[in-house]
Length: 324
Image (tube, rainbow, N blue to C red):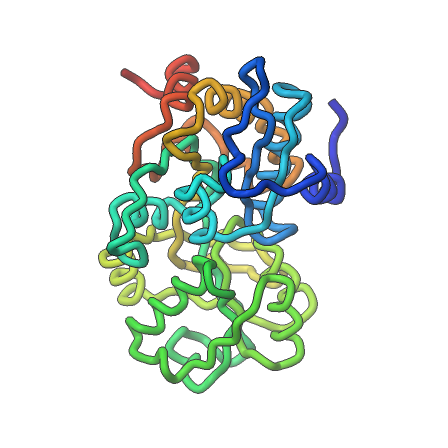
């Protein structure tokens, strides 16, 4: 198959299938047992989740179900979880820590337990990254400043708010509601002094900012990191040196694992086929975004704390990744 460019992946995501799904139609099927529609949620357009979802949709259409109508939608960690729980979508990318909280009904999902979520695979690590104007060397120094940590529904915003709460400065930081496309402009124009995201390495927002403006990645100090790990289920993680322009040293931060997730009522055979085609053609995901180089046998089940979908479990047993 021909190698596809990032532009081609984005185009497929915007046009594949010709129409968006209405709630409740995701499980309509053709007589042969194949899905008529498949809806997948990624993240912001141009990001790893969106490009990954688009790659998987394209693989399903070309290699599994030629007649399927695929729709890829932009989304966010918590948005994707809620839409998957409501069965408005078939698959979505999300953070393992959010999935765990939703499944258990804790933190942001308190009194709203979503135990119909089922794991398909973990794909890569997700890193919390905050780039700040020169002279700002710590999160505590954001007091009295403005920051763009994302819009409602994005895990980056929730993470940033939790960190500000731990530091006791949440009411001292002006948080500007913005999506990924606006963050770089807000930073360049001096409207905000920091921008924060959580996602795959390298994140397009941080790359753009550090390619065109002066900035520094803020490290998460040991005390703050311990609280975020112990109380909020994040993982300690390090952004390797030279991930971003001008970043010559590794930066300690927090993060999670990105998971590809479905819901319990998705047919077993469909999930089996999606899992199989994704794993066997995972190089296509790397073509879409290089963060998927992390998708290997060690990564597939990493950070998973919810049940695997039976279709995914069947495939992982067949290839020897899941035992028992």
